[in-house]
Image 1 (cartoon, one colour):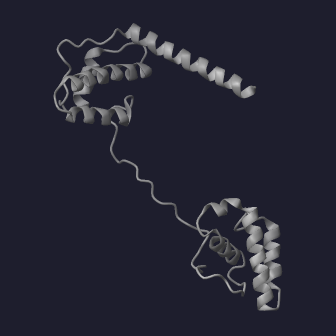
Image 2 (cartoon, one colour):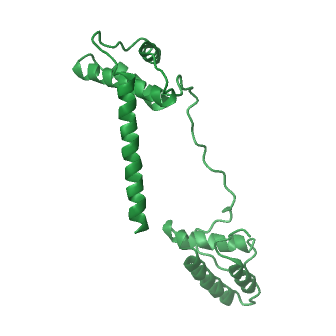
Image 3 (cartoon, helix red, strand yellow):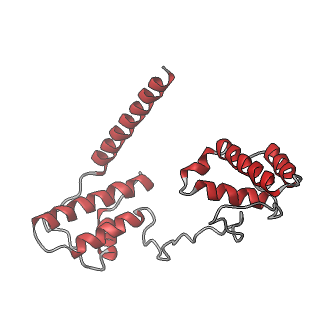
Length: 197
């Protein structure tokens, strides 16, 4: 069935309309079928010129064999088969998968910022975020020098950490991450209880 949204009874109506001898009566009957189709498929009404679209559906259901006066704008080229538009995906590779593309983009933005306090603070936050993200993949150990090296590679040596910068201890970060995860879990449980009520 070309249009399952309308069902088999509409197909039977289309066949019955094709059998009407008088063209004026056939056109009037087709108009009634279009009205019914609009009621059966309210989604069709969400688009502009929905009547023309439903007329095209009617004509396609009859394989364009229905000899009626169709409204101006109904195109015989209309088809149910279409190719979806191409979704453009980035061809670029992610340098470090555990950081993801978004963090790499953030590194690029921070690298292009002018020198100053704001950039320095963002560099600190970026380095700490990298350590947190690394810990989600590897909870056993994380070498701070590795994070610094990876930040250097991501920024193509365009970002240097301040001399006085020190990473938070791994244990402290893991405790903070666990606290956030526990709070998220509690919130999810609360929302489930609300939905049940």
